Length: 114
Image (cartoon, rainbow, N blue to C red):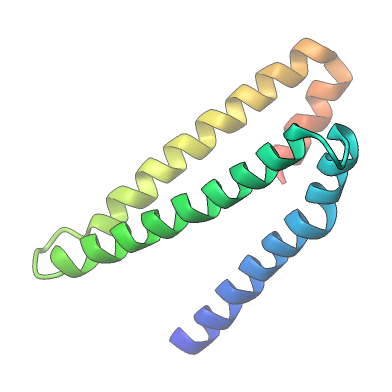
Protein backbone atom coordinates (compact mmCIF):
# COMPACT_ATOMS: atom_id res chain seq x y z
CA UNK A 1 0.00 0.00 0.00
CA UNK A 2 2.86 2.38 0.80
CA UNK A 3 4.44 1.86 -2.63
CA UNK A 4 1.28 2.81 -4.52
CA UNK A 5 0.78 5.80 -2.24
CA UNK A 6 4.32 6.98 -2.95
CA UNK A 7 3.80 6.59 -6.70
CA UNK A 8 0.48 8.46 -6.63
CA UNK A 9 1.94 11.27 -4.51
CA UNK A 10 4.86 11.60 -6.92
CA UNK A 11 2.46 11.64 -9.89
CA UNK A 12 0.31 14.37 -8.38
CA UNK A 13 3.34 16.45 -7.39
CA UNK A 14 4.74 16.11 -10.89
CA UNK A 15 1.42 17.16 -12.38
CA UNK A 16 1.24 20.26 -10.20
CA UNK A 17 4.84 21.25 -10.87
CA UNK A 18 4.38 20.61 -14.60
CA UNK A 19 1.26 22.75 -14.64
CA UNK A 20 3.10 25.55 -12.89
CA UNK A 21 6.21 25.46 -15.06
CA UNK A 22 4.59 24.72 -18.40
CA UNK A 23 1.42 26.81 -18.16
CA UNK A 24 1.40 29.38 -15.35
CA UNK A 25 5.02 30.54 -15.39
CA UNK A 26 5.23 31.27 -19.16
CA UNK A 27 1.94 33.14 -18.98
CA UNK A 28 3.16 35.20 -16.04
CA UNK A 29 6.41 36.02 -17.85
CA UNK A 30 4.51 37.13 -20.95
CA UNK A 31 2.33 39.39 -18.78
CA UNK A 32 5.20 41.18 -17.04
CA UNK A 33 7.68 41.18 -19.92
CA UNK A 34 10.74 38.98 -20.26
CA UNK A 35 13.38 41.62 -19.46
CA UNK A 36 11.84 43.37 -16.48
CA UNK A 37 12.52 43.40 -12.76
CA UNK A 38 9.13 41.76 -12.22
CA UNK A 39 10.39 38.62 -13.97
CA UNK A 40 13.26 38.35 -11.51
CA UNK A 41 10.78 38.88 -8.67
CA UNK A 42 8.62 36.12 -10.13
CA UNK A 43 11.49 33.64 -10.05
CA UNK A 44 12.47 34.81 -6.56
CA UNK A 45 8.93 34.11 -5.32
CA UNK A 46 9.04 30.71 -7.03
CA UNK A 47 12.31 29.85 -5.30
CA UNK A 48 10.98 31.16 -1.99
CA UNK A 49 7.91 28.93 -2.36
CA UNK A 50 10.02 25.83 -2.99
CA UNK A 51 12.25 26.60 -0.01
CA UNK A 52 9.25 27.31 2.25
CA UNK A 53 7.58 24.02 1.44
CA UNK A 54 10.87 22.14 1.84
CA UNK A 55 11.33 23.59 5.33
CA UNK A 56 7.67 22.85 6.14
CA UNK A 57 8.08 19.26 5.00
CA UNK A 58 11.21 18.82 7.13
CA UNK A 59 9.42 20.35 10.13
CA UNK A 60 6.47 17.99 9.71
CA UNK A 61 8.84 15.04 9.43
CA UNK A 62 10.64 16.17 12.60
CA UNK A 63 7.32 16.57 14.44
CA UNK A 64 6.22 13.13 13.31
CA UNK A 65 9.45 11.52 14.52
CA UNK A 66 9.50 13.53 17.75
CA UNK A 67 5.88 12.85 18.75
CA UNK A 68 5.51 9.32 17.38
CA UNK A 69 5.81 7.81 20.88
CA UNK A 70 2.74 9.71 22.08
CA UNK A 71 -0.83 8.60 21.54
CA UNK A 72 -1.90 11.74 19.68
CA UNK A 73 -0.45 12.07 16.23
CA UNK A 74 0.48 15.60 15.12
CA UNK A 75 -0.55 14.72 11.56
CA UNK A 76 -4.23 14.89 12.55
CA UNK A 77 -3.75 18.45 13.79
CA UNK A 78 -1.91 19.30 10.58
CA UNK A 79 -4.76 17.92 8.47
CA UNK A 80 -7.34 19.90 10.45
CA UNK A 81 -5.32 23.11 10.19
CA UNK A 82 -4.65 22.73 6.48
CA UNK A 83 -8.32 21.93 5.84
CA UNK A 84 -9.31 25.06 7.77
CA UNK A 85 -6.99 27.24 5.68
CA UNK A 86 -8.12 25.59 2.44
CA UNK A 87 -11.83 26.06 3.19
CA UNK A 88 -11.25 29.67 4.27
CA UNK A 89 -9.51 30.44 0.97
CA UNK A 90 -12.32 28.69 -0.93
CA UNK A 91 -14.81 30.92 0.87
CA UNK A 92 -12.85 34.06 -0.02
CA UNK A 93 -12.65 33.02 -3.67
CA UNK A 94 -16.34 32.19 -3.74
CA UNK A 95 -17.36 35.50 -2.17
CA UNK A 96 -15.05 37.43 -4.48
CA UNK A 97 -16.49 35.72 -7.54
CA UNK A 98 -20.01 36.73 -6.54
CA UNK A 99 -18.89 40.37 -6.33
CA UNK A 100 -17.79 40.12 -9.99
CA UNK A 101 -21.13 38.76 -11.13
CA UNK A 102 -23.82 36.25 -10.31
CA UNK A 103 -22.97 33.92 -13.20
CA UNK A 104 -19.27 33.98 -12.31
CA UNK A 105 -20.20 33.18 -8.71
CA UNK A 106 -22.32 30.20 -9.73
CA UNK A 107 -19.57 28.85 -11.99
CA UNK A 108 -16.99 29.29 -9.25
CA UNK A 109 -19.26 27.59 -6.72
CA UNK A 110 -19.69 24.62 -9.06
CA UNK A 111 -15.93 24.50 -9.68
CA UNK A 112 -15.21 24.49 -5.95
CA UNK A 113 -17.94 21.91 -5.34
CA UNK A 114 -16.50 19.43 -7.85
